[in-house]
Image (cartoon, rainbow, N blue to C red; front, side, top):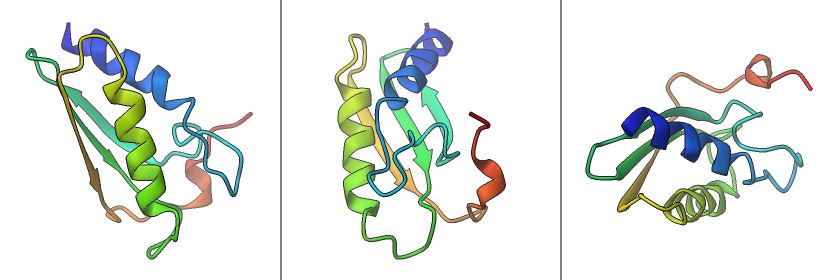
Length: 94
């Protein structure tokens, strides 16, 4: 079930858009990892396009809310990291 839940979280995060760029956090390559435990708790590791991004708090909260809204998710933790640093090459082709 954990792999299935991880996939569902990834799909849900495609609805979280970076308001400045207008693309999803998944397509921008901002989501580094999604891990779901058998008890339904989900850990997400993400980044922003730059350190000190003024939207970091907004994006982090939007990711947590989107994941937490899924059936089967019991808890969500979102960790913000800058290692490795984000670069434009991480953006998915349209």
